[in-house]
Image (cartoon, rainbow, N blue to C red; front, side, top):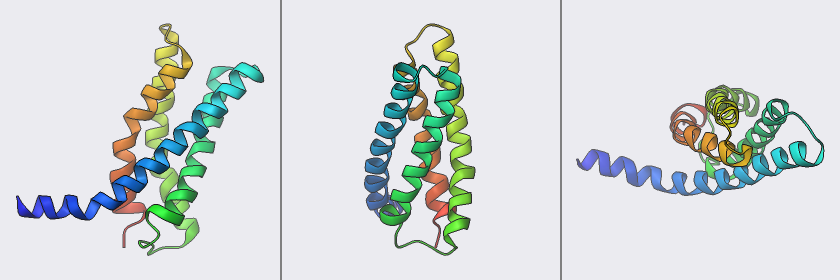
Length: 134
């Protein structure tokens, strides 16, 4: 198990930063969703897409500048495209979870938080080993 523990030690600083960026992304996502639905009267389905995209962009910029600032073997545009490909999967899970859980009566705020949680681990693994690989 020494290889596994060494690998975890290598990932530790990235996981911490990724988690903090993710928390900021939750605020961006939830804040936008709340404003769009409660203040601007957007449909949850449309507001969900907008809120997810804004949080994806916010998280990419923070992760690019801080979390993986030492791991950049490709251009900014390439990393942005890769990041979107990864988050398309987790964002899709987030969005489907939001729609399914709100359709059975769960409040959109709670449903969205659950959806965000489902995509987090996939996001980290693919972004660490693919988007920001060295």
